[in-house]
Image (cartoon, rainbow, N blue to C red; front, side, top):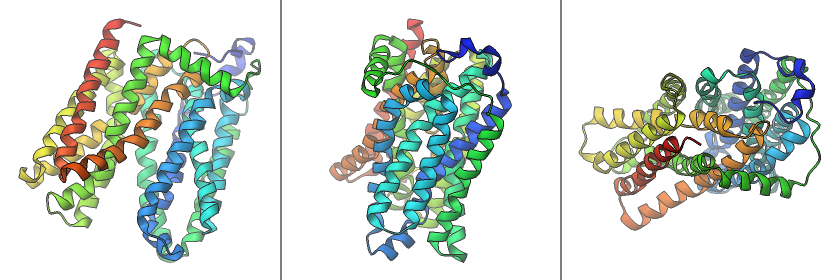
Length: 406
């Protein structure tokens, strides 16, 4: 699919190859995720220096995703007005500001920096989807989008290792400033590889009007409505198992913190490989919604099985959590590919931003709702069992959308 005005400049549309665009989009995704999780990786050290509790990191993450939700809602209008390359560059500038702001160790500036990171994170996917949709053949759509989304767990792994490692040898402020070079270098790479991309010259419209038009288009379209619901449900499941895997293993199954952390890292790695695997599956069977339905079924069954976590053999506990990583982290690329496939011609970035609003809501609501369930039940397994309904509900929504045909 092309941009609204790309038809006026056909040679420039394909100036960048699929390999170049995919590499650039994946690298930006890695940098974006590492920016979001940089502070979480060194939260105890930073909290000690600031004289606050490490649990405050939860509020910082919520702040980032809330800002991301709002920027995603208007990203489509910005992509149509300025073009995806400029919006990606703006997102990278936000990450640079974010790193620098957190490195100041000033709480008000950390709050402001977190807002910038969230804005950049919300801008990234709509712009990247527009970039990729221009150069991706339909037969490779799910694989390409899933490869790009593998940058999320890879960025998480990078942040988890790089910043604690650097902080062992230099001050954490300096470690974050070194981190700021990653988006700067990526910005330079993007300029070199995509300098010939056209700048969109669409008619100006207000951000509010653009948001209303995009949401109206989504709610009038059966499959886009389904994708919005799936994004909410699956992101709630993904963030909940990622956030509570360690504490569930320690609290309910009696694991040591180090051992449980190793399982959590294995989950993220499985998620990276799962995104690629499910992209291949979706392209092979020719059905993104069929794949999303299968992912909901497997996720629901896995969550239900975790109700009996403490009764499972140790090896089975590991297998279940790693499998949950591959399933609950592996859905995102397939969903984004389906959004690109079902978006009206020339509006891939706009519709992607609109659909991702609901994914951000799931990210914000999911872990807090899971925590509330635990406060009521006092049992992590019970919370997982209740959350399995998101997966089973996803089976129904995805299958009905598949049968609807549009």
